[in-house]
Length: 90
Image 1 (cartoon, one colour):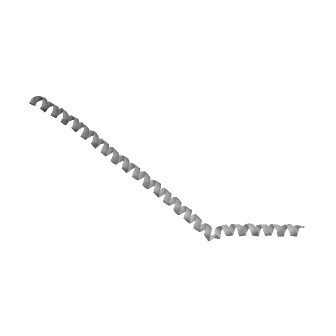
Image 2 (cartoon, rainbow, N blue to C red; image 1 turned 60 degrees about the vertical axis):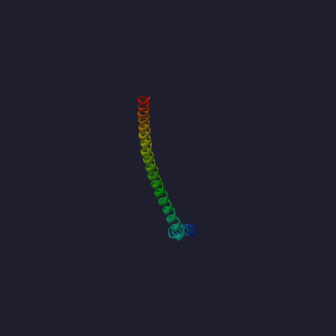
Image 3 (tube, one colour; image 1 turned 45 degrees about the horizontal axis):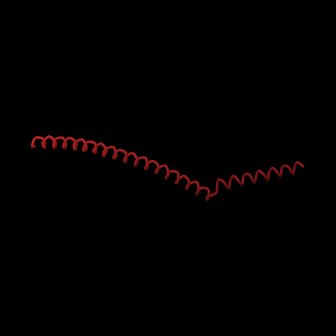
């Protein structure tokens, strides 16, 4: 009985070793891991680029908004001057 048990253990050890080797040496799995790493790097780079783009857009919007505020104030000042000149003429 011990011979059968030892041979059964040896077979199961051999099977475990084959499974481990097939996992380590499987080129398809390596390719899928490489593809997954490339995809993850691409996604991270895309997130980084999107964040940079959003910050740039926010800065441009802020700059344009402050420019609009300045132009609106200049418009109010010019209307007041126009009104003063109109009153002086009549």
